[in-house]
Length: 295
Picture 1 (cartoon, rainbow, N blue to C red):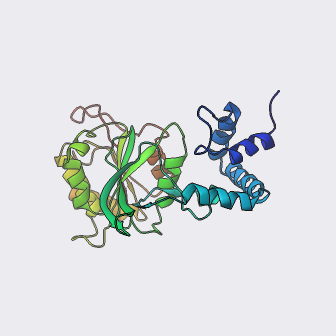
Picture 2: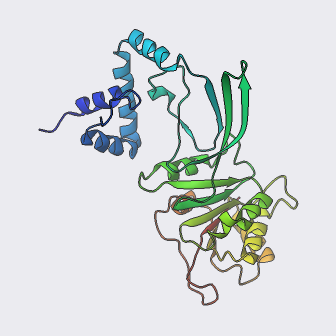
Picture 3: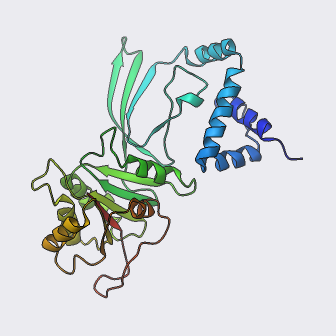
């Protein structure tokens, strides 16, 4: 007989993979309801409320004792710099710990190790790096991309979390030079003209000279490098963007360039919901890597 939602939620909240006995796994229906919840915001909020309600009824004294027992011998602190890591502290069994959830296949660079207390304690500094090694990748270039309040971050988060079987990884770059440096690298070259690799850029970058056409200059440069991409210009001023593209790119480089003011078009590209729109041209071949300019 099928179990109730409450019974499944209880299993989800009580299961601890760290302390579970070898071979112990959650029941299959737990995975099913978890998948169903995280794919729907309303269900996720309901799950969160039920988890919090369940946690409040537990014995906090036992919980705190377990936390102390689990971490009383810890001697290593990890400091991780990440753009896409999600805090899950509210679901943690250890309220004093800052737990972060990363996408599968996330890559990290260890760039510093500091030993203290006569070598008995260690601090490991790491930075999340994206090299386009996953199946679905988007190179996103924006001078404010590392700003905590960057207005387009919601599109990135939505695409990263929308489908559990399609983890979209974003390669963040804050300048034209850093983006081109990546594309010149072996990691960038292996992505050339791949259908599952896409490029997003803003049009204006304040700290570049000239600043008003940075996105167009990026497209011009990557065209010279052999990236024959479909390009979408997401802008608040379509007329100005059209003029910049016509002045900066020749007729061949303008192939597959579209200008739009609709955020839904941007979302369609970054979440890989559908194949990009294009018009076949013999000189361009069949490979298409979508590229977006955001102004």
